Length: 120
View 1 (cartoon, rainbow, N blue to C red):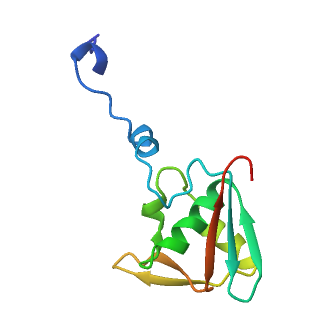
View 2: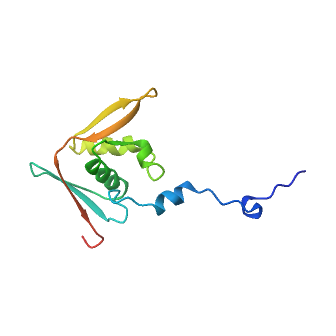
């Protein structure tokens, strides 16, 4: 039987994309924010925590929209979060693009984003 050395014994660096994704935070991704609230221009307020909060922050700050690839690896079911936000009354547009018809989501409800820390 042939024995192979593992990557650490062979001196190869360990490839860990999820770890890298969590080390490189973006200012709009909501990481480290306890709650994100979105107030529509007519006054209605939505507040989310966790993955939905990060998705809402990305939708509110990216004019080009958000795709599943933008949320990988921390969120693998973007369409489910978008559907919950739609059910709550947030207007989100879906466009299909590319030869494989992947979805791009854009926030269509005008308003402002409020990020609140752990105390808020």
